[in-house]
Each structure stands twice: as C-alpha cells, then as structure tokens.
Length: 486
Image (cartoon, rainbow, N blue to C red; front, side):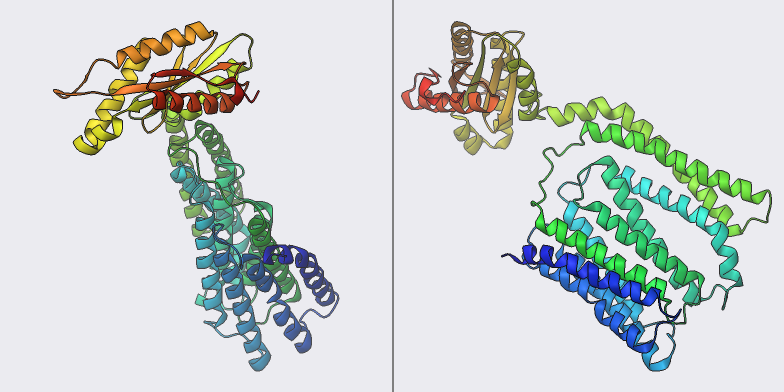
C-alpha cells in the first residue's frame, strides 16, 4: 500500500480524534486546564503528520510545501502553548509567530507549484479580483471591528496589529483561490477543503485579534485552529491521491476563461458596490472611522480597475480565440481546431477523407540554412497545400513539418485527386528569399468510414499510409483496410 493510500485511510481517524478533543474542551471550562491544553498541543501535530505521510511520494503536485506549512503552524501553536504553560501568558513578539509566518510562505509556495502549469494567462485579472474581494471584506469588517479594537485592552498596539494581520492573510488566500477556480474550474482539486480550512483559521484569528492577544487561547479558538488544520491536511491527501496536474494545452488564454473572467468582473464589482453602500449607510448613523473610509475608497478604485480589465477582455476575446486555435507560423488551424471541426464533420452522414502530409527534405533545409529558412519553407508549404484543396476542405498544421487535411464529403477518387494536386505543387522549387529549395511531400489517405469512424483512428491510419508512401517513394498511398479500427 502506498503512503498516500495509508494517509487516506488514516484521515477519518484524525478527524474523529480532533473533533472528539473539540467536544471535550467545548463542554469544559472557558479556559482549558493545563493537562487538556497540553493534550491539545500534542494533537496539533496529527494533521501535519497526516499531510507528511500523504506527501511522501509526491513529485508533481506541490503538496510537500503544504505539509511543511502545516508543520510550521503546529510548531507555532506548540511554542505559544508551551510559553503559556510555563509562564501563564504569551508575550509579544511570540516565538510562535515565526511558525505562523512560515505557514503562509510555504502555503503560497505549495499553491504556486500546484497550479503553475495550468494557471490562466489572465492571471492579472484574477489578482485584481482577489484584491478587490479582500478590500470589500476588510471594508465591511472594519465597521464592527475597529471600534472594538480601539476600546479593547491595549488599544491598537503592535501585538494587536500583528494578530489582525493573520485573518487578513487568511482571507487574502481565500480570495485568490476563489478567483482562480472561478476563472478556471477544476484548477484546484479538493478546493472546498482548502477554502474551508482557511475560513476556520480566519474566524479563529479574527476572534483572537478582537480579544486580548497576550492571553492564552480560548477553547473555541483551539477548536477552530485544530479543525482548520485537519481540513487543510485533508486537502493535501485529496491532491496527493489524485492524478498529476495536466499542463495547459495552449500557451494562449482560453476564450472560455475570457468569458468567465468577464462574468467574474461583474460579480466583483457587485460585491464592491455592496460593501461601499454598507459603509455609506453606516456613516448616516455613526461617525465613520477613517480607516473604513479609506478602505471603501480603495474598494471603489479597485472595482473600477477590474471593470476596465473585464471590458478589455471582452473586446480581445476574438483575438484570444484565434490565438488558441491557430498555428502562429502558418496561420492555419492547429491540431485542436482540426479535431473539433472533424468531430462535427464525422458525426454527419456521407463519406469523408483525411490526408496526412510530411515534407521530405525539410530537415536538411532547416539544418543547413537555419530555422529562419525552415520557417519560410513551412509558410510556403502551407500556402501551396491550401491552394490545392477544395474550398470546403480544412488544412491544419499538426506539428513540425506535418500537415493534415480534413475533406468533408469526399470519396476515394476525390481524395486521391486532391492528394495528387498537392504532390504536384511540390515539384516546383521553393523560393526562400532568392535561394531555391527542393522538397517533396509524402501523403497518406484514410477514408471514413472505411478506415475508421473517429478522427484519431483516421489520423493513425493515414499516418501509417504516409510512411508507406515515403518508404516506397510513391508520394501518395491509401491506408490499408487491415488497419481499420472502426
């Protein structure tokens, strides 16, 4: 059994133990006794241990830094708890603050590693969404919290400001995560565990900041942090037990992401407007704290910027769509676009054909004359192929010096006629900035439904025929019916 599977089986037991401890302290005194507090400090290491077990075999999911982050958080709780057990109070700056700082740094590293190959190209918009959402939350929370902070023990001292930074950091992570998954659904596996754990941290950190940050934690706060730790450990288990993250298919922004980002912009603007309206309503009854007014102004500015970004994305969506589906060098459709068009064609009735072409002599030109000459040759080859096919045919560059042609409603005779015209076009030398270059093309032909009913099958059979044509130097060959996979 792998370590990930062991962690998945142990996770329910960790939940039971931590929740059982929570029930114990919730039904006890307001401030737990020394033995109960010491037991809680020991139990705080169960979630990091669970996460470390799940991450032991990970190599691509970015959960090892997450497991280390949970260990840092548990270390912070242990250091502060030990100081309280020995001295009866927690001083500022507390030794546990170093552990909490390590938690946030390592957790950001874990998130970046987990999504770095799949993060949307529209990352700036996501960052603005997160920032505006965080400003709106801070604006609303400032109305009830700021008066209490000023009136509480010690006022707005350094200890209280540091304590207040923790819930802000929690909410910043939550805002960023929700922004990412709103633009790219499925980006973060098991994200509800992640968001739930951080929200529990935020609730406990907020209650701690409003109270006296120099005293020992109340039982409810210990429960919030403990359950939050288990939820984050559960996220590590879910991610480590799932498939390795697949990189994005295209270097360009997905047009679907553009539309989702535009819709998210409207939602962000609505949340910001609601926050500002609450501040304005509050100001009609009580004196508005200066910090609340500043936060409301920043929220308004952020929402304005986000709206402008959303409008620009809507305007640029056609360009993004073209970039995602077009080969940059030749201007032809790419493999993804060809596959989607083929799906629509092959789902219909009638006979169809697929040609696969490979340029013979391209490598020699590319190696002896350089990549620039190779690029010119590919562009000219695309022009010649496109000029030899029918208006209804789709020519695509599928990679390197390989092209494909989708021919709707084409019989064997029609497909062979087009293939012969393409081959004839390559008998003439290519002019590469005044220097001739001689290349030919080998073409494989596969017919639908004779050689397959799916595009993948047709391409494989046409590819095999193309290599047969190359080996026999016949230029054009039809797929062998024995290779049919219909």
